[in-house]
Length: 173
Image (cartoon, rainbow, N blue to C red; front, side):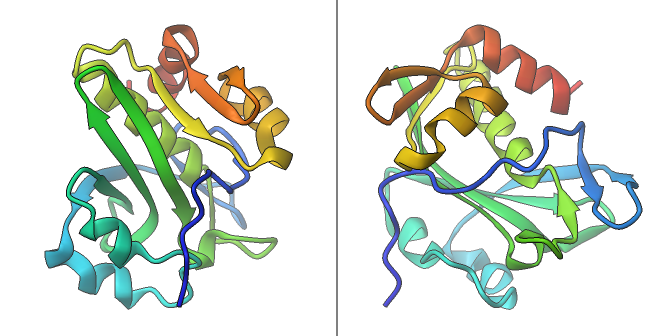
């Protein structure tokens, strides 16, 4: 049985303004939509997920959102799970679809797009776009370099207002 880690474990390949075809460099517009257990079939349709997204969907306090290419609204490009409390948005898990992982990935910019979306939801909720998350220890410096969070302690990071604004402005004009 798959177990979900309690930290974020994904490399941010590139911050783009959408998602970008790895082979051609073509940019594609995206949509982000909340998914529930009713949409489990859309997630299950993509084979090879590393994490148990059914488990994430079962937590009542968590929201799961999926990134879609506008031209392919039925094909999930990536997923993110977070808790949105009145005073804190906390990102639990994020994953590129299996075909967007590794050297032969179809699209770049998926994870960055999803992180920016969580920041946008936080901003819309009046929290200045700020979010926090636990990082896999070996990826702390990578996240600081690519996403601009501050290190709160050990491997707990927070994207504060200035870095959140940069991410939101990049993906959501």
